[in-house]
Length: 154
Image 1 (cartoon, one colour):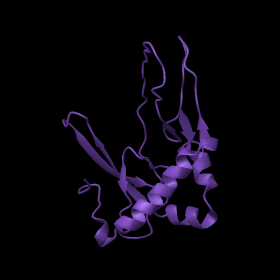
Image 2 (tube, helix red, strand yellow):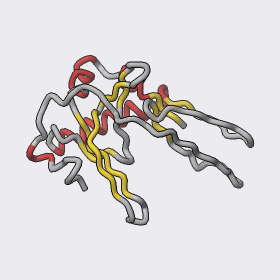
Image 3 (cartoon, rainbow, N blue to C red):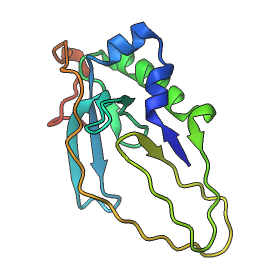
């Protein structure tokens, strides 16, 4: 399944779009075996480098918090953004078949592999070197109580 993050951003009310356009989020990737950890701070709303369209750029798996907000505010806003991002009206479900090919742009989608099949399914993944996510500059400093930064998030 893929969710369209352009549509997720566009589904937000104008005041909420105005708020999230000025925020960043800390994203953390940890390898399951503990051998690798990477942290980065990116805009909550990213601007696509080719289309110029804005899309939400947060997800449940990697986003740890919004450092400009208190922990409670961050959790509440992220819960709302995840709900909008994952809403069924913005999701495409693909029915895999032998020999199928799927191509998507990770800069404006979220992908979720549904484990609802039987038998063996083989996939080959090709990833093109990406770009650094860009968006509006953060309009506020990090909140002292947030305890988040690209260097200190856990």
